[in-house]
Length: 324
Ligand code: FRU
Image (tube, rainbow, N blue to C red; front, side, top):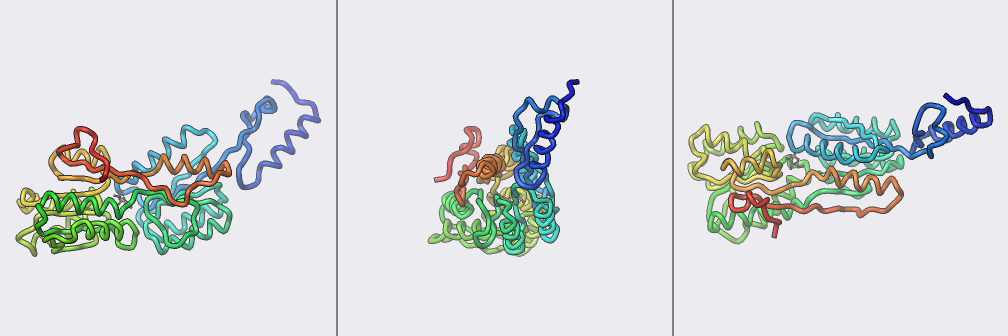
């Protein structure tokens, strides 16, 4: 070990003092005395507020964020899981503000209750990337997600085509206090409009497979003719399928979902459980890509719209096809 002369100790000491506050931090390459030879690099802490890790899609989102962040040694991501509890997620955002993270990524459970905490983060000069489920107003830095209205409309058009423009539909919606639920419904209604297609049963399954299964049991008990189930996500479509199968009626109807994870929706299409699934990318990699730009002082777009693909039995082997 080499010893530094007193003047160098002074220099190092002032460097540490200058960089120990909040905001981008300087990280020395080594905690030993040889640190003086390496130029200090900035390091950043990102808080990631995930609303729930109950669905495979959200586990995938976190994995995508982690994989992208791991390629950048200057980034440290702290993950918090609100376990589908809005109050807990609000508290997590406040904790990240208190900890003065350099940037916040949030995938909010519900729009309205998370809007104010995110605005407070912005007021505290913490840039915020909102992922997948939008908030109200414009107090955030950047929103990243696919176009749910477009996906809903494409699902409606796909079903219209497969049913020859006529049939009875069960719609199992996502949580209606979240924006994707509204957009997937409105887009779908536009997609089936103008033909003899009727939504005979609609229920909020809150994005959850067990809820979807329960709601589908009610639909099956009430209606002897169901031609298609449109669920706002693949867990919902799978829950509906299980209910129909238990009633011996799964061959009477089509099952259509959204998400298209390789090991979930796409596998269901390959197995003949679902008839179609529409991809909803997690945006995890794009969140890190844009976080790096924001942290470097670059301007990013207010809204980044991700693409989507449809997978059905005609194209699943070829990797699906982009939405029209
Ligand atoms: C997971 C999930 C996905 C869905 C997304 C919508 O919680 O329900 O299945 O596509 O959230 O925000």
